[in-house]
Image 1 (cartoon, helix red, strand yellow):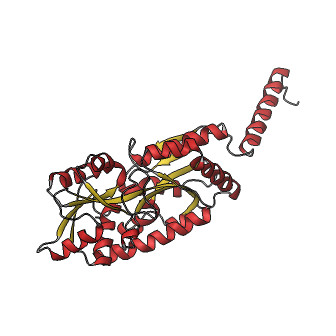
Image 2 (cartoon, helix red, strand yellow; image 1 turned 30 degrees about the vertical axis):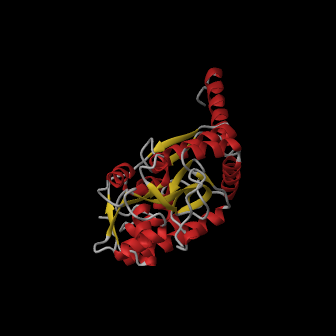
Length: 327
């Protein structure tokens, strides 16, 4: 005798089959059809985190799906970016990385938990925060050339604070010393603020750090900015010349970009790239990123890949020459 199935059981089974088919169709539907996780590799509240959250918010509005920011800080950004690199390449885990974990850290951390060139998909550049060199007002130098000359004539190396060992401020100071012959002594601190405070007090002669945290004290004449280390002048300090303008070929910035795991579908990459470029070029995007001290940028995924490769090579030479290491 065949087992009997009641009409109610048949109806329940049919509903279950339809639900499963619907779920499968949804999973295979247009991206994104569920929330997207956006990993921020630094602590909440910092400039990099705030930039990432602005981008995530704009993407949520555009796609009609939540792009949820998740902080995974540690190891100079490596922990968060490693989580991106090891995620499924389905478009539902992305990251907002910076020049540290996407390029510079390759030479500083041994071993690296991921290979940025092989394990990540470049998506879109968001913007950059230039590095600035500023001196205590008592230092007798008004230009970068005068500062270099002063260091060469001093009996001891001129002390220059930075936000920490291996940070872009540290690397830029070593680059300046290597390429100009300046006699400088980098002094690492734990963050921008203490490095800046000791430069203002005269405990050290100068500070090299991302411009964002230094702007108020430069404008208040508590520090004298000698140069910004970007291709063009920084809009927030239009009277401060670039290092390039002063004959020193030095560019050092903290740039931010969206990346995903290797193998991310081209359709997802193209869609995100177009939308992020649209945001960074919009009046709203420019205003919000400018408020965080960032200069908005745009470009193709291929240009971002080239930037990652070139920056890694440039700073590798500095790390090797200066014998910088992070334990």
